[in-house]
Structure formats: C-alpha cells, structure tokens
Image (cartoon, helix red, strand yellow):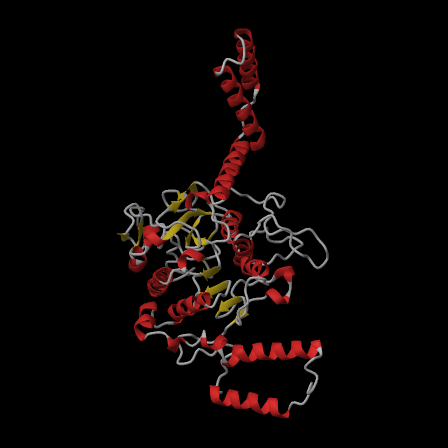
Length: 470
C-alpha cells in the first residue's frame, strides 16, 4: 500500500514540476489539476489498520536508511527470567499511590535530563547516555515459556515449527566469520528459556552452558575448567594419552586423521590454552572486579566482556535467582536491583572505555513485566504478577543510540499509551544492525518454509523497526 501511495506522490510532484516549467498549456493545466483533484477526492479514507501499516512501512524504510548494517559483531543478552517490574525500575510512576508504588516511591534524575529512574539504579543513572529504554514493549502473553519464546525468537508460540532463538540465529549467520576457540553461543550459567534455543537448526546451534560460578575462587566451566584437576595435572594427562595412543600413527596424510588431529588440538586449546584463559577472571585487576560487584551476576558481566573481546558472537547472562515476584516483591527488588545496577552499569562503562560498545549490542529484559497494582492480600503479601501488556527493555551499543526513550506506557504502567514495540520489531532491529536479513529463509530439516522473522504470515503484530534509536 505504501508503494502505491509513494507512486501517487511522485506522479503529483512530477506534474507540478511540469506545470511550473510551462510544459502544459492553460487548458492542460486545468485538466490535469481537475483530474488530480477528482482522483484525490475519490480516494477512500484509510482505516486505522491501514494507517498503522503506513506508519510501520515508514519506520522500516527509515531504519533501513539509518542503520549501519553489519556494525554489530557481538551481543550480550541479560535475561531477567521471571520478569522484572517496569514500575519499580526503568519506567517509574511517581504519584500513583501506595497501591502501585509500595515502598519504592522515590525516583532519581539521570545524566540525561528528560529521563528518571527508580532510586534503586543510581549507577545506571550515571550511564543513561549510553543506553536507551523501550517503555512500550508488548506482546500480551502472560505465560513464562510462551512469553520467553516470543521474546527470544520473535515467532508465535504453539506453531508446528520450533524456531531458533536470537542467539542461535546469530550463530548461524556468523559461523563463517567467527574463528575463535570458544563456542559461538554461550550461556551463563545455565539456559533459562525453558525451550530448545537451537530450535530446528539442530544441536550445532545449541548454546554452551558454562555452569560453575564466576564469583568462586575458580570459575569451574563445564568441560573446560574441571573441578579438582589443576592445569599441571591436566597437561600431564594429555601428554600421557599422546604417548600411549598409537591410533593413526603414520597416517597423518589421510584426510580423516588430519581432521581428527585438528579437532583434538582445538579441544586442547580450549581446555588448556587461550580458550580457558578467557574464563580466568584472576587476570583482571582486583579493582575492576570489585567495580563489577563481587557476586555471581557482577562477575558474569565481567566474563561476558572477556568473551566479547575474544570475538564470541552471542553471550547470554541469566540473572541468578530470577524475578518471578508473586510474593514479597519489594524485598526481592531491594536485594537484586543493586546487583543488576552495579553489574550492568559497569559493563556498559567498561565496554565503552575499550571501544567495544560500538560493535556490541547489550540488551536487558525479562519475558514480560509485572502488574502495576500490588497484591497486598495473602498469600501474596505485597506481590506483582505476570504482565505482558507493557514492560521495559534496555538496549545499548552496536548502533543503538543512547539517552533516548522509545514509546510510553499509560499513567500507571499498565498499557501502551504511545508507540507499541513488539518482539519482531526489537529483534528485527538487532538483525538489521548485525547485517542479518530478517526475511532470509532458514534451512529446515524437512524442507519446510521457515524464515528469520515472519510476523505478517504468522498473524503477529509489528509496528516497525526502532528507527528512533538507530
């Protein structure tokens, strides 16, 4: 529809220019203008759906024009499993009363004058120029698994195809560019999406879950840094195996044996060499580790920065503990928000100081938000419940501008007031910055038609890419 509209506009401009130059006689001018007026008058008024479609098309065209495609080299996703309250964090609603604010009724200014945050985020308030907030994220789904699937794939849950997550998509499209020793898609500490992130792409695109705890004396990464086995013992074991293993001796010219040897050397490089060193946080200054926070989440953020330096395309940090605060909500927020604030603020500052933020997207959200009205009655005793109608997402780096707000929720944070953003809009914008074609066809093992994003054919809502912050 937008194509026809643009075509009419171009014809009208062309006709006006011709008139200006005197190319038409007086009679021709009158006839041309009369025809145009009748055609314009006859055009039916657009429906709200058509107007939304035009707005989406305009945003998509503007995004395509603005985006520096391929600028994003890596992504760090901070997944707040369970859904963090938008009202008590990045979309505060001062003045709405105790039933909506509870104990968290204070807001603070940031280094961007137009933006306020909850008082629980004083360090992020000093870094607000580095990130933007989407305050009108929406999908309307209140189920943990289905909402997580929506947010991490951009596809409709419950269909016959199990689509891969955004991390698996990045892995698939970056596989020819990434030559590092570490797996291309890493999750700390364990996958929390409650669905198979690799989808129909298969096991090769499954995330590598580190396990362990980066805040422990030794970050014991599953299969790389083994419990109870120091480096010297690991090396001695390798040398012993090499001495007694005669399989393939004298067959180095056989392609299969050469490939096996190359795979073995890569594995040793991961376990004993450069790959393992990425997870050795003792290589970092004590002061920097303290800045990130001496807790599991803070050290996950530091480890993620080290992985990005090593070129890993996609890293997910699953916040330990979760945010499913049906009861005792405010105690959980007061305990966990300071850790989130410290770790995330330091990550943004650290990436920026090293010149990595321009090529690294950082995005932070849960699968949905929490209800704006507090449930004070038993058994909740001050809880907030699942809320997919509107919630907040933080995005930074990789081509996203900082210091901006996209969209607006209503006066109590319950519904979208202005400029809805749907999962396909957010993920599509990230794909655009990474140079990934959102309309590209994916290889399905049964030969079925499957695409990176396909909101229209799935009956999914979309309001256009995030051209406001590109």
